[in-house]
Length: 366
Image 1 (cartoon, rainbow, N blue to C red):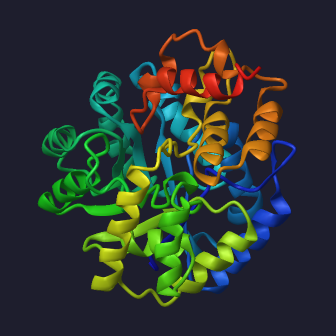
Image 2 (image 1 turned 120 degrees about the vertical axis):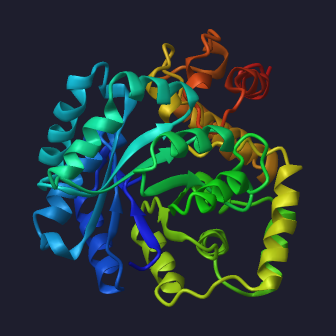
């Protein structure tokens, strides 16, 4: 496997529907450059990710020409019997009769308890015995100590998908480096998610951008993705590509992957230090928070407006975008502080407090 994975959570959309024509062209380019790894989950794009994969990938290409990963999400299981039912629904939605990799989705201390109560690990391992899963693993969003607990209890885990990027490398909230080190301690293969942190490492503050420009190298995304791919034990780096331009850029530098040089490691550390002090809201736009918001606030989009105003000094566009996002949805000031968003946020953001800041900027202008 070449190390660039096609993450299918941020596929191109037209009026809220997956742009199947563009997705098909992206798949073609991806294959032509020697890549073959696709990642999805049952709830991505309200279920459209799986069906788009069926329409554009699995119905058109031989089964042995691609590697397909899916995940068991907590939203769909309440008891042991649900696990197999959901799994069979996923096979049907994707149009396949087995998954190459099947991951227990977004594991943390609390969700791990739910999965144990539902015997989700045991049922999934049984599905592996039946040949419906080739490789069993987890995707993980918590501290390193929790990961060590899970890997100790379930040594059958073959692969761990972790959030890992140069900004979160030494983060006390994400613990990217420490989680990676636990994976290496247990000799588990590592898959990287959020290498570009939901696009946050593409649109950089001016001072950070200037440092990359002086290297005269590749795109901002190329530095972020190549950084993660340069670590030992990393078998795949997922990129949630949303258009053909992103696809072409990514395959260009990952087709003949060159690991990071010492100078490049030093450079991204400088860039990370600048970003950390630039007031950027480190939201990855996973949109988990949006689904359960009782006020229908498009939280990631409002945070993007805030970042745009803070770091690009762009007042008109940021306010215009804010009006667009709140025209038929809640404003930041509509937040009732129920906290549902914070319990599910993989970045552990203090969303209620951040929405207050957004409201002060965009909702209270005289």
